[in-house]
Amino acid sequence: MCIFMNNFLSKRACVNIKSMVVLLLSVLVALISLYVYNERRIQADDFALGKENTSRSESWNGIPFTGRNIVEISAIVRQYSDLQSNHKSKQQKIILWLGNSQLHTINQFKLGEHLAPYWLRKLALCEDCLVPLGLSLSNANPQEAFVLSQYVVKRVALSALVLQVEFMGFREDGVRGEFSKIATPDMVNSLRDYSVGKNLALLASGAVGNDGVAKNEAGLDGVPKQDIEGLLTDKLGEIWPLWKDRANLRSNVLGDLFTFRNWALNISSASQRKIIKPRYQKNILALEDLLASLRDANVPVVIYSAPVRQDYPLPYDGVEYSKWKEQIELLANSYSATYVNLDKLIPPQNWGSNFGPDIDFMHFQEAGHKIIAEELYPLIQSRMK
Image 1: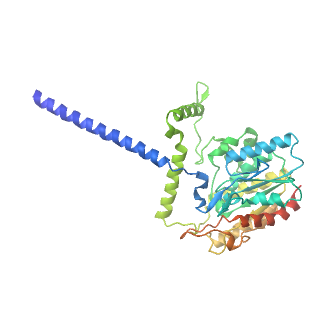
Image 2: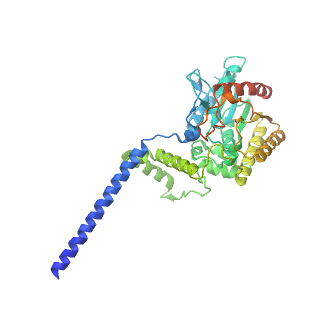
Image 3: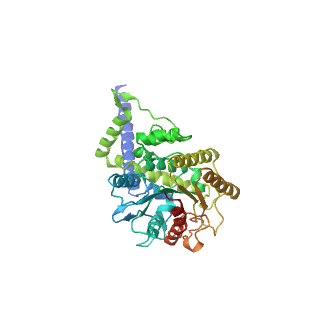
């Protein structure tokens, strides 16, 4: 009996050791795979730009005046706010130009080429008298444009606002998490005065996630939970570099999931997209709030429909797209804004190459940036205060 029990326990111990070895080897392989996977660096905002496109930022005499993410945008707004406060702006007329990646991307970029805000600045009659702050976010939607407009208007005296609207942006919803970095109390409070502003104020301040679920901010001994979590996260990042770099891992995973979904469902850039009604309505309300707030602040507004590549069938429902442009024009007229449809402005030769079914309908070469600046300049001049 004793011999049997000893044999049984020995076999069981052997099985446990083997299981532990397999588990440890699995963890080791997983960690190595994660480190290798993390070697691929992805700029999340630029993921969908395509291989021919280059995102850019512009400076003038060493001072940046275009930004393509919240960090760059907040730095630019702070700098121009300080210049105006210290009376160092030389009576410059500052224009806020809001848009999506079209505003900060050049197709087939060559050294020395520039974005539309730069060419608009070059058209001014005198050196340094017109400053277009080109603030843009990839896949931006009108809700984000509304929040950005409130942020800038409260810090910089504007002579006009130029707003790019794009049909696909009305399929997006909410504001990205980075907005919490600029969610100052005065901006959040100003949002609450408008129809969609209350929810956007919560999103921008980080009180709720983009899924609409409230975050738990319960305190522990008078210290907010999120502060403790942030401290622990920072300390763990100092010990384990992979934890600190988890944002890049997340971007890699989401990018691969996006690519897999498109492959599995046979989706390409030319696939027709229809509106998502709840998101569309929320974005229309946000656009109306933006126009109302700028009218109240006595800031003239020029709205334009973004240029879209026209030598291929558009990836939109034609009826929905036409009705959308009509609605934008009606809204602009209702709030004394200037609307112009520029969707056919850029000629075919100024767009990019195609790669199989992937057609870039949104990003053009530098010549396109010059064309759009030349088209908008007289409209802006006629509205500037």
